[in-house]
Image (tube, rainbow, N blue to C red; front, side, top):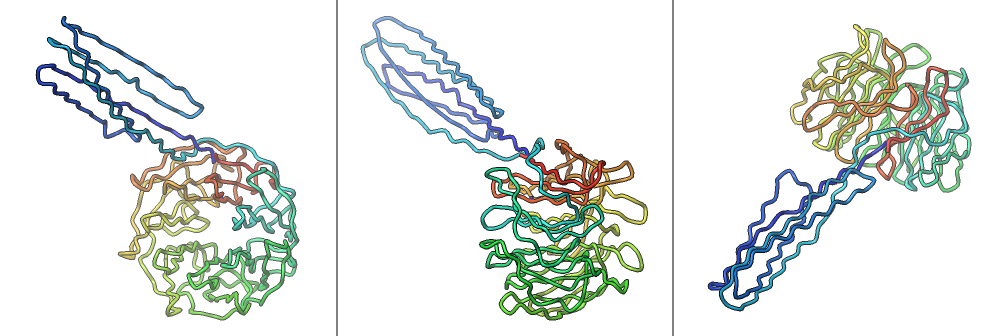
Length: 439
């Protein structure tokens, strides 16, 4: 699902040339600071002889200011010429400058509001770049409405309604561009129904039912295009161990291997090797610290190392180095600010830097530079508007700009332009239809 400031530092290297007419030798030394992201080097040597000794110093200073943060260091060229005979040498070497821009989220800005307040809804970025917002809960009622956000206009427009009311469901982008919505809680209770959204027509079509009704489960699109749904909670009060696969080509669900530990409100992450890591959650025993790995080639779940802290209502993010960052959530002792990393090469978890603020039911989004931004959530103080950034290289968290509205149970989407769209949720004033961008 962000305010970004492009910071450019441009340094031009000072060059000093000494030319002697007797040997006609030009020496140029160029030194570039290793901390410079963009370097433009211009070396100019100009020698003009006279019958007398002439010493000339020319200094040119240029400072450019732009709307982004730009630091330009002036260029100083010093030419020292000693001549006894008349001889002229001219040599110019020019290297074109380049500029590198990196998005760094800084501030949140309001965008237009959704047509309906909602929380525990889903958001999916379509192939068109638009964001599909589906279902949720609003003023104690499950929703079947859906709407689209167009980042080019900043506007929300309604699209076709689902056939079934639902919240705490899952939404998955299929390889053909359609969106599969499954399960959740509807007007009849826990749902086993599923339907598909056609982004070309804006119409929803019912597809095969899941074998088990479930909500607060997870859904992951595998490399083969099938969708894996895991765990959840049902009408019998069971924390489910069952998992099943949806085949888009047939519209049929089939059971696959069972989890070793039943759970709901867990996280699921698709690793770079195609396996699915499920971590944490809640069950009849309490908060879960166990994690397990699903192998699509065998359909079997295998236990891996336990997290250092049991947690649910946390977030999980796949980093560019292949590790999984788990952050925040809730456990026996309360709200968590702790974070930990799963290493697929060892199957073990290790602690990393702690967030500045404990939080649950927040959002976590991967940025283009590989860092992670978490936003909102709630803790013992109340509903949060704060956001913070995790640096995957240092393992440290730094505070970012605050959201314009405190919210939790919201959704966040990373747009195709790199900005983050936060929608809905619960706020201090109640159910929210507001949306904002981190730019």
